[in-house]
Image 1 (cartoon, rainbow, N blue to C red):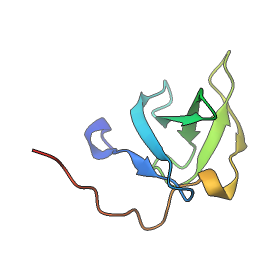
Image 2 (image 1 turned 180 degrees about the horizontal axis):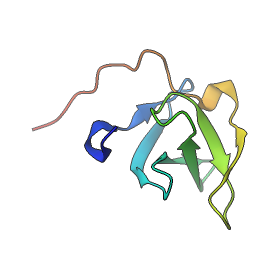
Image 3 (image 1 turned 90 degrees about the vertical axis):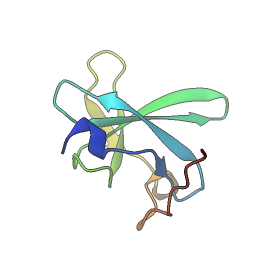
Length: 82
């Protein structure tokens, strides 16, 4: 996938995961705010379907996040404001 193919994700709990770019291994990275704390997540499937926490030092996937923080499937239609 090309970087332009990725979009923000709506998670099962309604939180918006904002696409922030690709890491050195071309995994998509997303940022969420949970309880006032910014958290960066990565998708090990490379397609925005299964999110993991990542280590702060090396950026390696640590563990899958709980189901409530996984992306809705299918994603709701995204609206654009003009």
